[in-house]
Image (cartoon, rainbow, N blue to C red; front, side):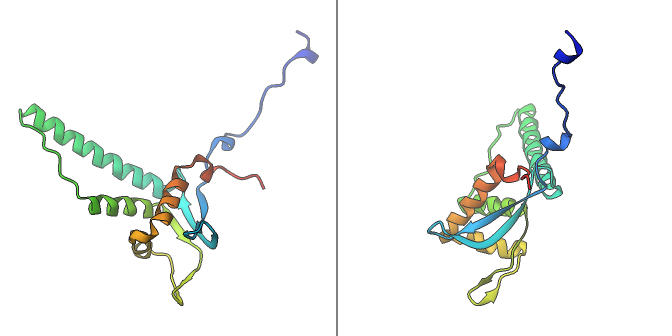
Length: 150
């Protein structure tokens, strides 16, 4: 193979493979119309996401250790009975743990600033399940945290 016939060697930065630290989601109303209200979520490598993942992993490991310990001691493992409202509240709290903030918004003639408490209150209302679903789908979509070329 001559020098002129050599293939070009790809060259790129490792940044090309990394997800963005955050991603913005525009909240849609119940009819699917854009509201102009933007929520910013922590991406996969963001410290908020890493803290959440570490907490969830510790909980799973703790439960696994409890099950193993009861089996070693010859006892039957009885799983805790979960209450649907408690599961929903935990899922909402875990989702809110990934919200970095949101744009200014007025709801019911009053400013509604971001706080974890306000986010939980907003998402906990059963009639707002559409926004909860939208946020969960946003977090699950890989493209939500793909860097955009400007």
